[in-house]
Length: 278
Image 1 (spheres, rainbow, N blue to C red):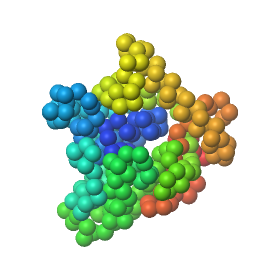
Image 2: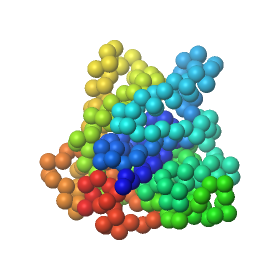
Image 3: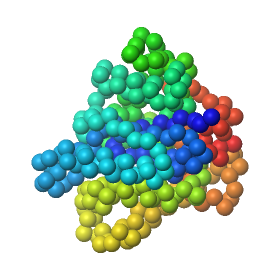
Image 4: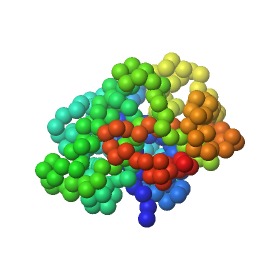
């Protein structure tokens, strides 16, 4: 029986960057994997045409997201909240409750929901995470959104790794996943988001003039960045990797922390949920 894995980010490229290798592992073992973007991504560009017509950018980013999830055979959905305008509201919370309830078998929902922590440099990231967390308990309350079947069990919620320390303190890993076999897919997924990785983000960081002119050169930059981060986390969370029994030959990992707001899995369930967690 497949597991249902729901990955929720604020923008159309957030899941790939944060846990794309693990998502590919989930899909590889036969899980039903779905990426969700809370926003439509309609402000992530600098050209006058996209500033004047944000809907065209939203449409482009939707198509990029579809191409990305196709790399691993995952599903994709956008809540289409305007980029930069995520707030925790009753309507937004109810929409999130319905979205989570409706993914997976009726009454069971997803087995695992993955998201960023609610501390981040980007307000959309912070409030997207808060929307998910505010929905957690209400998933099991029948009178909340009675038009959708309430859940009989709480899913497991887990945060992907970050480098932030304000508000929530430094990230602490509970589990790591070895992504040596899927890091190329993670890179390929990211490269589907051309408007971001090869246009907006270099512009925003002041490095657009340093971007290689060819696709292979640009892909090599993304690959260098992702390999460096995944290798550093292999070193940083080596104690977790050792506890799980990961071989010393594993070079690249992604890391996760179990949220207190969902079901708290024991070691056996954690090993079943996360690839290579033991």
